Image (tube, rainbow, N blue to C red):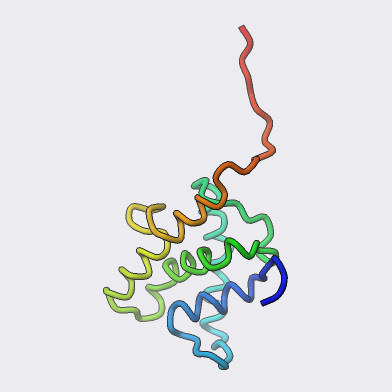
Length: 127
């Protein structure tokens, strides 16, 4: 896909593909699409609060974060889609992991964002 950024709809479709719900060339079921769409904002907020990565706008997801974020989303949504215990364990290892933040997707997101400026004001104490 051309461009440096991907949209929330791209993320939802990629998540459904990772879950095995969406096959190539088919449209997503509206119920499945809406379920994953409801999980996008809480997942992005959780990743931000855990200092894994920050995505300011879900419709402008940086391309380098996209695949790892889709893996994390698939992990978060796997219980709804009737995945077997083995499938959920595999998705968990590729997503957030157990304990949380140790999965491949979370580690990739953390590694990509490591060392980037935060633009936060540095608080100091003078003596």
